[in-house]
Image (cartoon, rainbow, N blue to C red):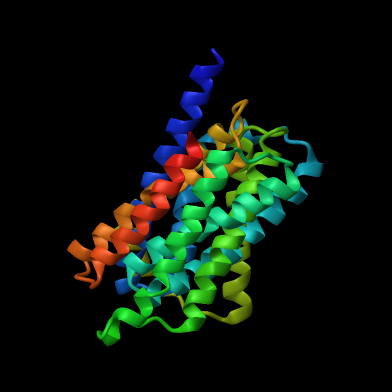
Length: 289
């Protein structure tokens, strides 16, 4: 029975990873005709509306947990803001591989906070992940195409997004010991929507609501987001699931982003980026053993 539960959370996290890879592509498409803040506010609002029918299952939560869910929402608020700004300014194939750096952050957080212990295989896998990320740094120096160039500020934003997403993943694991997946998803989406509305008010950001709501990529992204997050929350609540292993599996979607870079956005150096991803994914597979 334990093995079955273990297999199930792995499948759920794998589903999350593949949808996550597809979402990165959809983000890039959505940002072609809408601004970062337009995508974020409409994306969040639509996702919240989608989960409203399940709101009855979100009630009855202990008020003390609402504070920590609000903190998680603020972490995601920043992570998405940084991540969307980065993906808007860099090739999707580079972002897809760079996003794998969250493995390092999640592993360190899992070790430091949850006292998880790495096996020999997981240590070897983590070293391969580091090697693949180091190789990726060469991509920025290899390209003669100006469109492929990436300013350092956007690389920093992408890495900060990875760090904050890793922190959010750790909070998911802790919160799911005391709340249900419905409660966590509903309240964190509500707080997230409030944070973006507050940001728009304070920054006086101009939002073209009509054109943003007509952006079909935002609608698709919202549906996939709800499906992926529910799968991840359920996996976090399963006995035996480990943050360090889950983080490795999540990165399986990077191949989606890299291949989309070639076939949808006609980006360069795809073979080398696939090599970087192959090294990282090999580390992921070894780490899951």
